[in-house]
Length: 143
Image 1 (cartoon, helix red, strand yellow):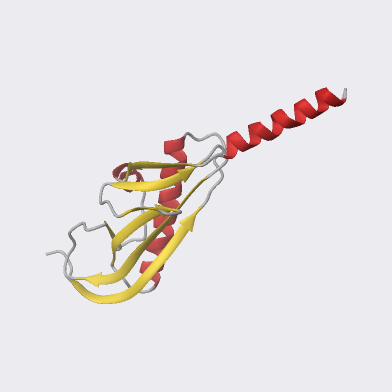
Image 2 (image 1 turned 30 degrees about the vertical axis):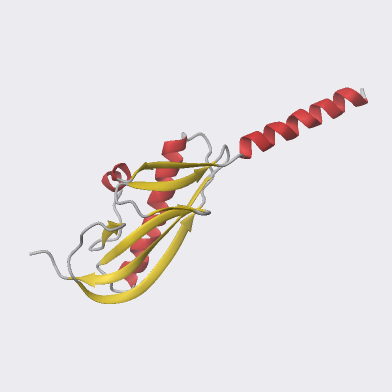
C-alpha cells in the first residue's frame, strides 16, 4: 500500500514538472499586429524597422504579460501574450503623448529579440510569458 502511494505521488510530481517546463519559442509578429487594435494614433516599430524622423524622445518603457495557458496552443497563447504586452505599451505611449514606440524588443529571460519580423516568448503547459520594451517618441506625421 505504501509503495503504491509513493509511486502515485512520484508520478504526479513528475507530471507537474514536465507540464511546467518552459520552452523559449519564436513566432512572427505580423499575425498579432493584423488581428489586434492598439491605442489609437500610436505606431509600433520593432527592432531597427524604419520610422519617421523622431521629434521628441519621452523615455523607454518595459511591460510584461504572463497569462495562464488554459486550452490554447503554444502559438495562440504566445500571440495573446504579445498582444497584451503591446497593448500595455501602446496605452502608456498614448497616455504620455507619444505617437510612436520605436526600437521595440521582446524577450524571455536572457533570450532577446530585436527582430522586426519575429518575437520571443516563453511558454509552458500552464502559461506563457514575455516582456516588451520600446522608446516612446513623437515622430513627424506621415505626409
